[in-house]
View 1 (cartoon, rainbow, N blue to C red):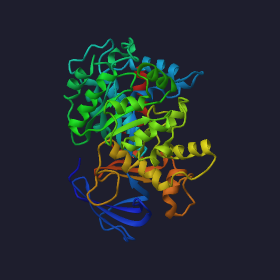
View 2: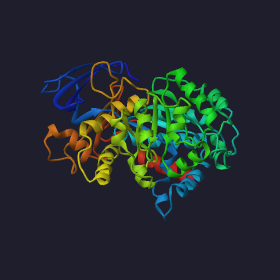
View 3: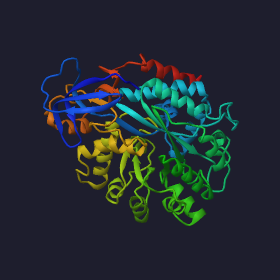
View 4: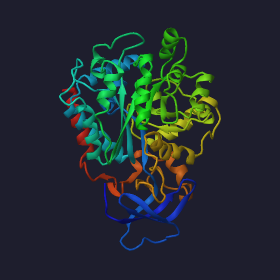
Length: 447
């Protein structure tokens, strides 16, 4: 994204295990060339980042168009399934141009929150009714362009979504999600290409949305490309019950039988699991993406994140439905939800939660060289103010604890992607009026 050598001076930097004061980071060709500690004063010409600088944050699970649902779905009561009907109605109004405008604003909101990479779980592929656009990937290309214009990286997780349930065809709302079968999905997805700011991955929407005999096609597509593969897994007990009725096993067991689980796969939510499920997921090295603000918003439940990690499942975090866009809140909520469930404290250290939001989140999205501040890594940085009403007071050496347990997205002061300032002093450098862009894009879907 940038080839201009430059130096950033970090007043305080989280280096994975501790906070270091006075760190100079030299950047060349968008990567960290050198990290120099014990630098009490900024070198001549360095760009100064005051506060606590972290590696860029990774939002491992996003549905960009869900941002249009914010607040509107808080009227009245219901369940995940009633919420889903409102979501479908919003999806019906998307066009490539409308989706581009909305996603550009949503990704700019993410940049303001310190997010430098997003995993976009994408399944709105075709026009209403299921007719392909002239460019069969017009919707996906709109998302890729939106991320570039907002200045962040993206992994487009192109999702196979072929049925409304076990043995049932898509509903009228779902026709625009479906390619007909997994081979047609694979042919269309193969037209999408990686680029400097983007990776192309795959997704199984869920076991209810991809027939069991076609799961291997999606898994093979990802394996051949060494691409990440994500799947919504056991978010609802109704899905588990229907899977047992149709196949005599749980969703995790069905995925294992068809070769979907593995180190490049991430299960999203992983909420309602058996002990055998947890062992299958962890033993295969399959990751877990927790989305606590959405899981509580939709009344999904609290997933067994501690048990999954103990069995070997790496944890990442996502904002999913964008009830809020705040990776600090996602990290904090994972710990605090576990405290509520167990009535004990301290399941993860602040450093462990930050790893989920940075290095492990990037790895889940196929950016293994991103999410750390060290030589050779991509130069993605997020600076959190230590002098706001939320963060003032604690010692700087407790910066990790302050970021996770006190800060919010509003405390992000700077966001740097590939060595380029995307957010400077709390203002987006590429999208000048992010609130206005969000309001305009959401209103266009309601018109």
